[in-house]
View 1 (cartoon, rainbow, N blue to C red):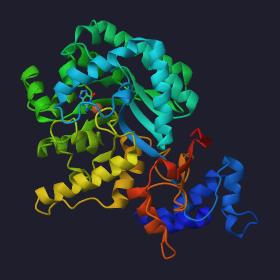
View 2 (view 1 turned 90 degrees about the vertical axis):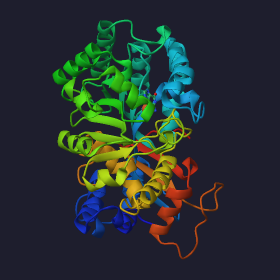
View 3 (view 1 turned 30 degrees about the vertical axis):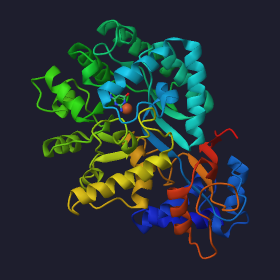
View 4 (view 1 turned 180 degrees about the vertical axis):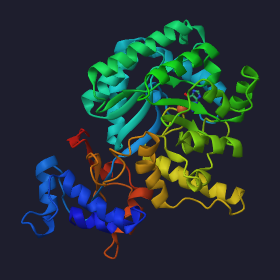
Amino acid sequence: ETFGRTLEELAFLFEDKALADQAVHAVEKAVGLNGDTRSGEKHESVELQEKYEVQFLGRGQFLIPGFVDTHNHAPQWQQRGLGQSMHILDWLDNVTFPNEARFRDPEYARRIYASCVDGFLQQGITTASYYGSMHAEATKILADLCLEKGQRAFVGKCNMNRNAPDYYRDATVESSLSDTQDCIAHMRRIDPEGRLIKHVLTPRFAITCEDALLAGLGEIAKANPDLPIQTHFNEAEQEMSFTKTLFPTFDNEADLYHHFGLLTKRSILAHCCYVSEYELERLKHLDCGVAHCPISNMTVGGGFMAAPVREFLRRDIKVGLGTDSGGGFSSSILDAMRQALVASNAREVMSQGKDKGLSIDEVFYLATLGGARVCCLDDKIGNFASGREFDALLIDSDSLKPGVMTILEEHDTTKTIFDKFIMTGDDRNIKQVFVQGRQVKSS
Ligand code: GUN
Ligand code: FE
């Protein structure tokens, strides 16, 4: 199969034909070909091979845009699968805070974060929005590692100065803010143009931040309008009712975070499991993005309810997928796609058919272009449209290799091969991973 041809067959990924055509041309451009390559001597796949060392081997291979993980906790890498079925605040107190506190040790941080970044690249996650721990030193190490290993990443020092144990919280509002400034400066230094790395302002959630801390972060956001912002938003009943007792003057979290200047077009709001009509309108109006994390929502969220994604799509509220790795059990965005599909089917039943379940194409959109939009990176990544950077995965769906993916058959079309990969493939089918044209998956 040729590269260009495969993309044309994947036209269903794009809503209209014009976009699909654009995508085919974009890839040609990305590999340094000009418009009339089809009549040229060299085949596109040969050019790709030479320029990026893409190694096509045989049947059932195709390129897709890299996956975007819009919500991910790097210091929870080694606690995946623990505390499943606990409610959110109990899980934080008993499992997460004691674990994250270990990142006070830079050597430990370096070892775990190296494994974490390698692990996500292995899964085809070319872009990740990471929460770090509360430690500035460890967070800078995480940013260094993403840059060194070539992952596109938002990396945030986690702000938390209350409702966390003494051994794991920011000492004062001032120290929390100055550590944040230190991390911002570090990331601007190591990657001045933000080609790969950006600091993301990361108030853990309102429960762990005093008013003055939220206000201070809002000020930093205002002074640095290029920086993304992330927090947890309307995740679970336990969390929402405690937030109300801490901030009785606000009726809802949209008003709360907006009051402190933390809701902008660069805000990435994790979960949004419960959103009223009023909040839906606010999120749309403020152009905030949603990180849908269907795995953790049904394992440690405690709400046991995932976000109303169909409603977000209907209103064109930006939405992507998060592994929320740490919460939940999986670092695979393929798993998150499948769980998004399952959760949406539950939503269809609950809404008596009003909110149709998501299709495979739609969960693929969430994992790629949807996530790129949430991160305000859709001018650079998310699909192969004109002018995009080469963040791509070479998928090998060859059934003869060991693996659990559904075997290919003679009559399979590109679409059925694609569906088999999305629903039953795993990282063994992700042969090569490229970020900005650099091969980043270590074999
Ligand atoms: N809310 C505050 N912190 C966390 C976290 O680490 N994980 C999840 N899922 N929710 C949170
Ligand atoms: Fe989370």
